[in-house]
Image (cartoon, helix red, strand yellow):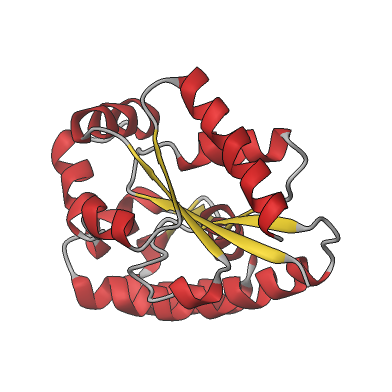
Length: 195
């Protein structure tokens, strides 16, 4: 049976960079956030539920109005929990179908809120990516055109990095790209030896 490496880390830590490094080594990668976004845009059932939860402004020009929803959910934990209850079962079903088609010895599943969801038991190994807080804030501000306040409000809804590190099999401190690539290769080799 295909083993699964759960890849997690706080916003702006560099999970996607690390995932792309695994992918370059030939490891299949499933990005739960990307799939969630696709489902929110493409599933009529999910669209109906999100409009009921957030109102007609949940979609703009036929696409999910991410900034509008983000403003609402990161200020209201109940709305965030309800959003997660709508999206996570759909992503889980999609992932199960994808996993069943994989033949490589292991896959990477990138899940930003792996620990927050209490999903750690669903993985054979967990890798947490970290980076200095200010670097993370700067990366997200640049990438998503968010203010530092918006980034900090997202961070408040994520577990503390020290807690994630304690519960992880592997940790990458993503500060230097070349060093990160070397660490990914080392983890890749270790996993192949273990399985």
